[in-house]
Length: 519
Image (cartoon, rainbow, N blue to C red; front, side, top):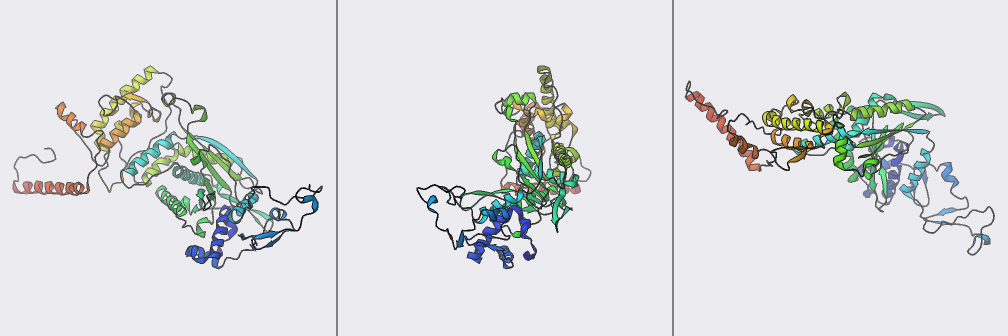
C-alpha cells in the first residue's frame, strides 16, 4: 500500500469534504473506516480543528475568516455571544451600522463536509475560466452503443453507457490536443504551467449522503490514456462500484488532471461546471435527446425528415494556460470521434472482441424527394432481406477463438443505398415475422439474430418452397435458448457423428457414399 503521508490533501479538490467526513468518523471510532483510511489518517494532522466539530487541512481563507465575528468565542458545540445592546434585543431595532448576528428562522449552519464544499466553491472563484460549447450529433453514438450492448447481452454480459463512450472520446481528444492537459501552478509567487503526460480522468459521481442530501464525489481513472476501450470500461465500472459500496480510498482522488461530469443523466442540456485549483479542464455533457424545438413532433415525421438526437458538450478551462482556440479544437475532435472518424468505433469493437463492423456515418439521401425515393428504398429493403437469407450465415460468429471482422458487402445496408437515417423509417417487409410494416432497425435486428449469431443457417439452395418455408419459420423471430443439458448434448452428438464418419471412411475405402455434411 502506498504511503498516504505523501499525499497533498490540497490536491483532492472537490473531494475534501469526504476527507473531513471520514476524519470525523475516524476520531469518533477508528473501526468505522477502512484500513486504507486508517493508514491515511495515521499521519494526518489537520491545521485547524474548529470547536464546532468540523475539521480541515487548511486554515480558513480570509473570506471565511471575515464571516466569523471576532466577538464570537467557540466553546464546545455551542457558541456564546456577548449580550446584545438594547437596540438589538427583542422589540428593539438595530443601531445604525450595527450588524445583526442572529440567523434567520430556518437557517442551518453548514458544518463538516458541507462547509468544505463552501470553501471549495470560494476557491474556484479565483480561477479565470472560460467555457466553449458545442452541440454534437448523437445518431451514430446511439446506434453503435446499441450494437455493442446487443452483442454483450448475447455473451459476456455487461452494458456500455453513453458516458462510457463519450468519456473515451474525451480521453482520445485530449491526447490529440495535448494543450488541454495543461494546468496552472503558482510556485513561490511565480506562475508556472504544468504539462501532464498522463490523463487521470476524474468522474463526477452523484452521491446521496446519510442525511438524504446529495453531493459529488470525483474519483479518477488512473492513466486513462494508456488503456484500450475495454480496459477503460472495466476501470470506469470498478470506480463506480467502489463509490456505491463506499470502498474508495485516498489514492482514488489524487492526481486528477481532467474531469468529466454528466449532468445529462438528470435531464440537463448544457452546463458550466466549476473548475477546481490544480486542474486545467473539466468537460460536461448534457442529455442525449432530440433538440427542444422537436420535442412535440411525431417520431415518424422526425424519421422522415432525418432529424436525429444531439448531445451538448462544454469545455471549461483555465484561461491562464489554455486558449479558446485549443478548447474549440478539443470539442471539434470530440465531435469527429463521435461521428466515427479516425476509426473510433472500430477501435472499440476490436477491443471488446466484437466481430462485426460498426455503423458508419453518412448523409441522408432522398428525404426531400418523397414517394419516389421511398419506393426505391422499399425495393432495396426487400433485396436486403433476401440477401440475409442467402448470405447471412457468412456473418455467423462460429469461431470462439477468432478475431477476424465478419463482413460481406451484400449484407451492408449502404450497399443497397440505405443509410443510418433509414433505421427509424418503416418499410413493407413481406413475410418477415411480426407486422407487415416495420422499421429498418427492427428488420436488421431480426435478421441478424436469426442468421448472424452463434449458429448459421444456409437453406436457400433447397428447391422445394415448402421445405424452405418450414426452415424459415423455425429460424426467423424464434428464441433459441438452450438448457445446459442441451448445450452439453450437442457437442457430444457432433463428436459421435464425426467418429462415425471416420469409421466409414476407414472401413469402406473407395465405396461411394454421402457424408453427413451434404446429407
